[in-house]
Length: 152
Image 1: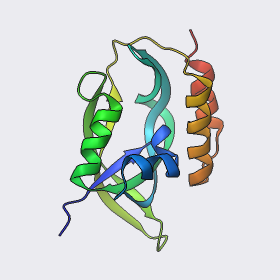
Image 2 (image 1 turned 135 degrees about the vertical axis):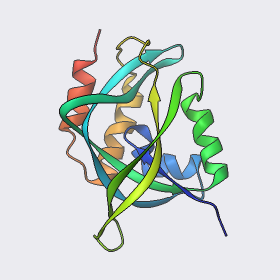
Image 3 (image 1 turned 60 degrees about the vertical axis):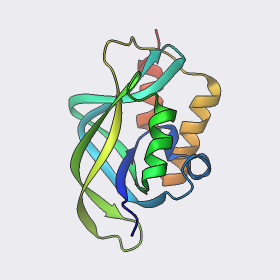
Image 4 (image 1 turned 120 degrees about the vertical axis):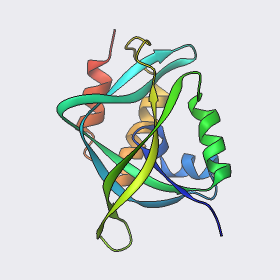
């Protein structure tokens, strides 16, 4: 039996084709909304990338994946864990893709360390994230606001 974990994606890992290349065993479980979080872009050593942080009244749409241990290891490397991003867990209600029902799930996610300044990502990264939002059927306004408001 596979020891899968649930993973919360809010940026480039919403892009289904790229995620499947990076994590071949990953399966889409469903979608959720992180209430009282905001999406923003911070600049690390290797570029500027999306992250989330608590902010009352804001929200971030997310995709939830089931990932195998090998997939989680690939995500750790891709996300620069533990150097650039830290890993956290939360419980959240997930709308299941197959049935439309809501299920309470525990999932992990990555958050960039707050000491990194705001920044602007490459056009390629922006388009990857936009495609991910389209792949999951999310309103792109949250993403576009993050890309605009994080410029420095």
